[in-house]
Length: 206
Ligand code: ADP
Image 1 (tube, rainbow, N blue to C red):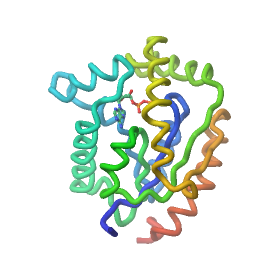
Image 2 (cartoon, protein in one colour):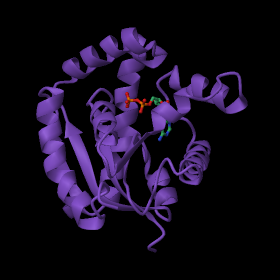
Image 3 (tube, rainbow, N blue to C red):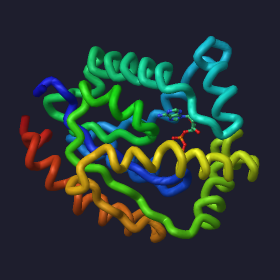
């Protein structure tokens, strides 16, 4: 199964900071960050898939599994074909996928999950505040409406949290995510830097 992409998963409720940490990690040589939500948002919203994404995300619902996995596979293939993601050199950092147990099963043949970083922010009000700020900055419909935000938390609890039990407990790491991005980053790097170092050569000396 050596053809599977070695990867770590950034896991956590909406607003827990997965995207913030993922984007920073993606800047570090030897890491490649892919956020499923970003891939959806980059679609042509007039295309059939783009329309489907808008219909679901604007209500705070997940896009159906089959479509999501298909889109993810196509995107990964393209990133590899264009040598943007180099599986032999880069540790893949996935954010926002898998978001259901069925997605986790579908991805099993493609990814070798070395660690799951569960970003924990016990203060739901703080997460909502972060999302509302993001809505203003990034023009995100799914973050603008309080009802939609609360529905996303329900969907997270019902459909996404069970994904944690799909992976062995010894690869799941809880990361306190209430502090500033740089403090959270210290905990994230503490966990992922040794994994990257163990599995890949120094990307700057290749
Ligand atoms: P957040 O960072 O707040 O968790 P994302 O940007 O990851 O939000 O996702 C935004 C929306 O995109 C989700 O609410 C959902 O509608 C859709 N989406 C993203 N990833 C997935 C996925 N793996 N499966 C289904 N839908 C997804």
